[in-house]
Image 1 (tube, rainbow, N blue to C red):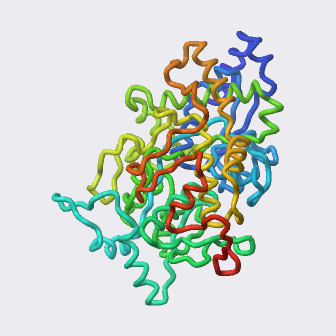
Image 2 (image 1 turned 90 degrees about the horizontal axis):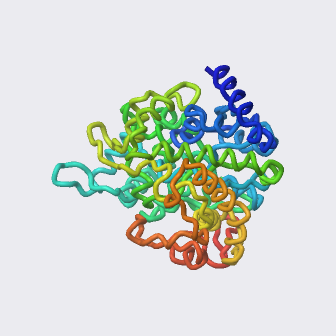
Image 3 (image 1 turned 120 degrees about the horizontal axis):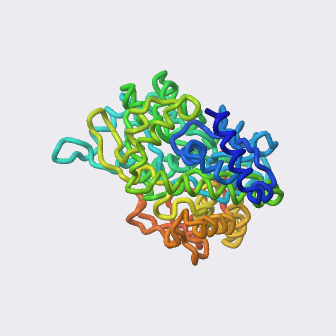
Amino acid sequence: MKKLLLTLAATTALANPLLAQDLEKDELTFGFIKLTDMAPLAVAYEQGYFLDEGLFVTLEAQANWKVLLDGVIDGKLDGAHMLAGQPLAATIGYGTAAHIITPFSMDLNGNGITVSNAVWEEMKPNIPMNADGKPQHPISASALAPVVEKYKSEGKPFNMGMVFPVSTHNYELRYWLAAGGLHPGYYSTENISGQIGADVLLSVTPPPQMPATLEAGTIYGYCVGEPWNQAAVFKGIGVPVITDYELWKNNPEKVFGITAEFAEQYPNTTKAVVKALIRAAIWLDENDNANRMEAVDILSRPEYVGADAEVIANSMTGTFEYEKGDKREVPDFNVFFRYNATYPYYSDAVWYLTQMRRWGQIAEAKSDEWYDEVAKSVYKPEIYLDAARALVDEGLANEADFPWDTDGYKAPTPAADIIDGIPYDGKAPNAYLESLPIGLKAAQTVVGTEVKG
């Protein structure tokens, strides 16, 4: 099949030599992690959108997020499906230092928090029930707090998993815990465990290994993207207690990351890649998700996510199963194009930076101007809009589907859309940090095991 596609691409390039000449680089390798939100890459490949742009693309699954990031930095990969925090952290020098940018946001929502069956049974007495006997959602971490306290009194650390220190999953799990009165711990320059002063100890587990690690009892719960929450339900080993849609309605998730050097050296290639990804995102959401079962079939293949189609479909087709038999409608669990999902908003970048500061990954206070400057150095809506304009001009996208006149900041997220009822305004990051009851404030720093300032 790959040989056939390469032949077709060569034919396309011959038929349109101008296209082939315009591309500075036409053979590309992109990395991804086995999660359903890598879908735009798989769809752009399988639907021939990369080929339409004259691009010969190879997609390669990566072992973990660090290997993926290193591959982009050292040039083994031309770009990748990335955690939104990775380009930001690399650019400010947290962890691996490199200037990584994103011209394309891959999706909204798509994650969940799952606990073991035993922990769920201990939580249930603390959760209000609907008239039908099913739990009321969203479920607050305050229902988990007495369970954590019990484990503490028994001398047992309460361990939970997330996928990477600068992952959405780390920040979402921390947000949920803190909103329920549980401290997820601080980072410091000397101690990067993230467990300073923690009630709940968070550690890294690669996404596909989450269910097995939960089953082994190494962790009592985790935050991860699909299909690894639904996999716990199908295996009968765990219960998802909340989706990130319930945590923060239409929150930003993964991005497509490339080095700044790649974008500068290959601007036409970069634009072509973004055009193909936008088309894939449109296809994934068009006609009320009419193509989702076809997407499920693609993603279930071993070269992509490799999970059972039934498991992937449980969330990709607009539903989500919490317990066996408790399947609910969540039409926006995975969003790939609606609500300007693919536009790389500065305000999304700023939120990730506030969470890095909140938990001590950014050790010292920064000005509001600093947050804005970093966001603009990493998120590149000008590349995105250039690609979108080309698609509109070619009749492949609708003018009305893109936010041409935005200043790059979304309107503030209202209190009603966030689990703790605290609104978020990307233009006022320090005021936002002050409004959060748990987390570093103003000039506070973590010294040893204490917060100073």
